[in-house]
Image (tube, rainbow, N blue to C red; front, side, top):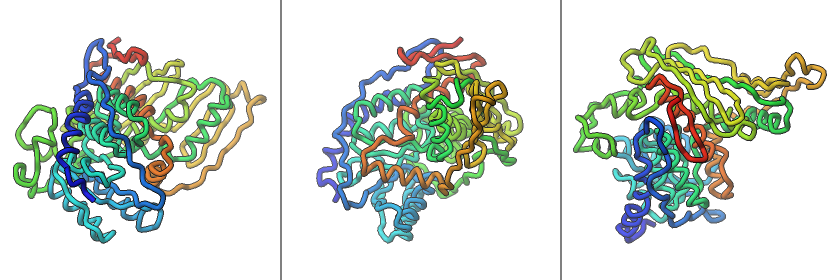
Length: 440
């Protein structure tokens, strides 16, 4: 049932969630500056976990391309009997998107979710256990913080936030409300090979992890993200709230290309780094985290090689240094599909992660000390479905998800500093104790 006094709920969200969310909309900082959240994390009302035998009630916020994909996938997971959940509400600034997603649920599951244009009305409901946040990057932190304060478990799409200030604001909110589940949508963290690599590294099998490399490269001749189609039926002021979509960004004339293809624009997205490379950096970091610590220094370059109309780069290369001195090299491209081998180098052995399995081979000086081994890992099928199902599981068990805010924050340090480096031509450093960044 919907709360019979929704105004009280909205008042609470405006006073508490919006306070915390104010810090999440800060622009990226330049120079030597603190990126500590400027507003304290609001303490929310706490979650209402699903009871034993209770169907998990889900709201979806932002059902555009990825969000509608989530709607299809959740309906299919439930239809296969792999989770007991129901999508009961949809929110989007575009009525067409919201109603299309509601149509999907009705056709696949038989119930029609309630539809809202303002996501805060969805969060005001008492019957919703969790929300899936598939908004554009510049809304990720704001919606996630408001959901946490509203006591809703959340699955928030990658990248965790648009910038580091957003990430630290979300981290502060999550720490202030530790009983609320917050899972970030980086699905490759579910692949067993990375867990196998983590155990080898934590056990000291490869010696000191000195160097790693990964990449996400593809080739899109017509321009990356141009495949998101423009709909002539979008009518700002009639069926679409363009001002709300922009959020705290400056008002500008309606531009359907920005609305549909925002990943191409640096004001709204970090492009390849946040949309693609976080998929590879996150599981690699999970495997290494106990040995390497926080990112401390990043230098990156970006180029416009083929897609010169895109504001964001179509070729990027990153070098990320961590507390231990470990260096991670990351390549990304939308103009060539050949990437780097997924590889973790130790002084005694190397871990190869290009296949489904985890293979360790000794380096030449240690062949008599370290035995080679291959850890065969099961085929888990669709890793994104596994992450969705994991969210449903941890909503019941109240365990910390693997793709959590703390890991997401550390990945966002690398994303943010790499973005700064590409646009300023300088290396950037991060002090995790004082939460400051500085140009080098």
